[in-house]
Length: 146
Image: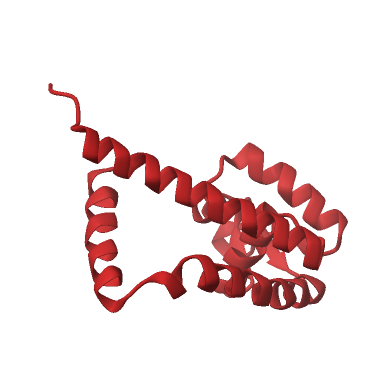
């Protein structure tokens, strides 16, 4: 199999560099403005968008981390009162649910303003409508191939 051409490798490297740059700015902004780690925000954000309650395994898939890595994050979030663990109910009695607390919701709401501002400044605000369509097409191909 032939190696990808230099232009495609350059696009790959640019994609990785752009991702790392945006994450670095998000990390700094959330820490400085909200005293919140980006991975914690991502957990709170996933919970918020899932209606405030989700099984551990589903949450790990949503935030793209291993269950053991998520468990460490959940320990810290629970210690801060931002989430709580609950036993499943009904047919799901053995499962553990992660529940967003009122403090967690408030923390997410405040941090989300910072997150949205940075994402708009560095990413979404830089894209034309044509860029959005192209990126959806390209990233869809990548996701389909995985």
